[in-house]
Image (cartoon, rainbow, N blue to C red; front, side, top):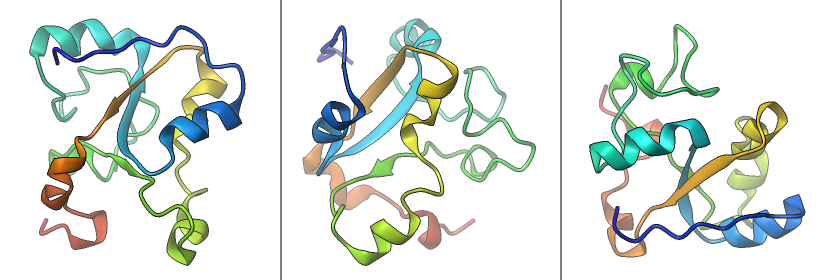
Amino acid sequence: MENINLIETIKTENELFKMLYGKVFHVTDYSNLKSIINDKALLFNKDLKYKSLFGHQKNGFFRLRSCISFFDYRDCESEEFKEHSDKCEPLQLLCKINKIVIFFFPRSQGHSLVMHNESLI
């Protein structure tokens, strides 16, 4: 949590996509930032402590599995990405609020990701 870089303004969706392209990241409402910094970690949201548009449904896939969801934009050119990327759009938060926080997953830890379709639960 010590390497937090704040970017004040992104002017276009294309500008934001360029920043996300090739990366794995987590998106959350800006109102959650203080709690995340205090916790010194991203924690799963099973008890609905964090405000979220993604996992608040009673059947929230990742929340009910005590997981944190990340968006995987490492292979944006693949057919699988193109087929599924619009099903859960990380920028949909911007339609409801105007401030989001994006946490990038370290490239060196990519091997430890568990894909949603590989979940053991």
